[in-house]
Image 1 (cartoon, rainbow, N blue to C red):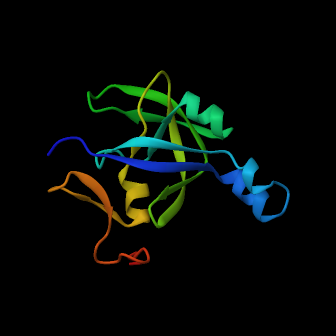
Image 2: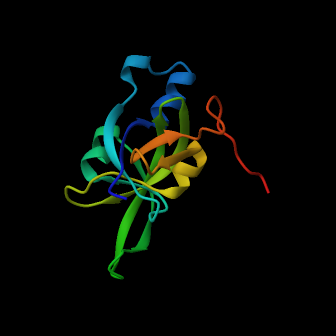
Image 3: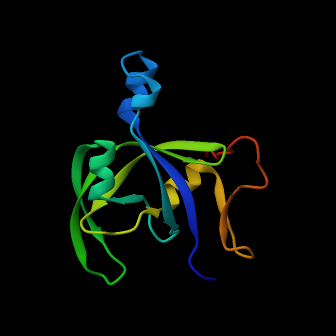
Length: 139
């Protein structure tokens, strides 16, 4: 199977809260659509510095990450970020990598969105077993 990309929308979680409380108009909510690499080998949402700045995401902490080549790097964790795909949404933290790295949609946000990869069409789809509302396991 080749690489799978999906168009997702990233939204400032802080702006959404301020909007719900009446402090920010809907047209002032910082959001952007991005083409993300769907990466089941990654755990988190991974964004670059440009996206962090555009959405004005707050730094929560730093963590150390092990990359596929076994090297390690220290990266900022920012958030909250709301991720939207088709009729699904979830709120997550994101790891910020330096440089012009592409957005990665990892397994944790994918699980919460209840989306799957359709290997035949090589695309991300809403889980066909629960097309109208996300299904979760609690145990």
